[in-house]
Image (cartoon, rainbow, N blue to C red; front, side):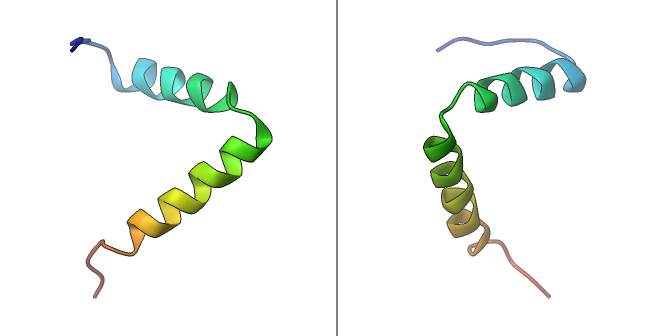
Length: 44
């Protein structure tokens, strides 16, 4: 396991770059996976 100490901006830029490296199909599948995970969040 690797521990990184970064700012929020650096972390967001890295996450965005990693996401953009995915193929279009992988991006769509990642979006659907996010939608499924959002269902478990509590709502009022």
